[in-house]
Picture 1 (cartoon, helix red, strand yellow):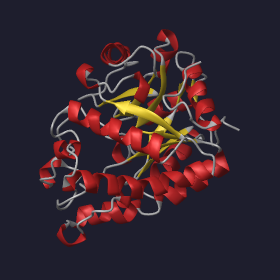
Picture 2 (cartoon, one colour; picture 1 turned 180 degrees about the vertical axis):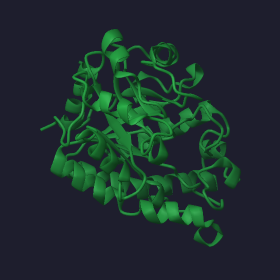
Picture 3 (cartoon, helix red, strand yellow; picture 1 turned 90 degrees about the horizontal axis):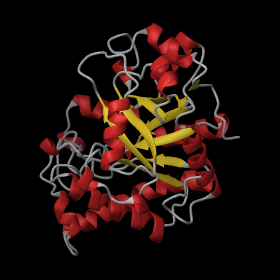
Picture 4 (spheres, one colour; picture 1 turned 60 degrees about the vertical axis):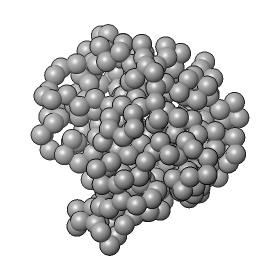
Length: 318
């Protein structure tokens, strides 16, 4: 039984982590990211397979406190408007279906920036300055964290555990939190962990680290689940075993592992043969799920109808 990084984690969070760790290698939990309140991805999966993912991903980008509405493209504004009220949707869904919730946060930079300022190219916000006491960057960082914490607390009050994946894809330089390198992002992650866990006591969170870089791993004391995002350039029949080995080598063999984002779903037959211990996979949203640009309908059906995959319209955490 894997212990939670937060020793004061709620009973529901401990139960969920135990379930994930026990599932890995015996089955895989189906997961799907959504970005908008209509959640067309879920409708599509239900229509094509007759089932729904056990794990559903919701996006927090519209909850960013520092969105520059005056200097944003129509595309940016559409993304923000379509994402509004997703936390209410997530709460309602989790309560009614006992499903598993994971949250992603494309965090508009706490200071400055224009358009989609979660992208480093759209902001001059310096993540490294957060690490220095007394800087405006550090103050803004904590102010934003406290605002988002209010949303996370709603789940705690409802006794709903959340797979919390902050600073995702920290190995890349495209987001502001990774622009100064994954080690800086790791230090931001630890600051958030300490603030949310030891100061604000958000004990319903399971902490998902999302960066396959050895020197950046925050340490077992800060992580519940190690994960990576994988976007193959073309379809390949795979169980992502090679990537699993890579991830464990640069993070920890003591933690449950997950495919936090994939473009192409893993091949369910290969997984059932190899038992590569991924606890869950999450297909990215929109065209990565809907249509056959990435995942063929036959592939979708084979996964959701497999006895090795855990998929349903409601979860098992009842």
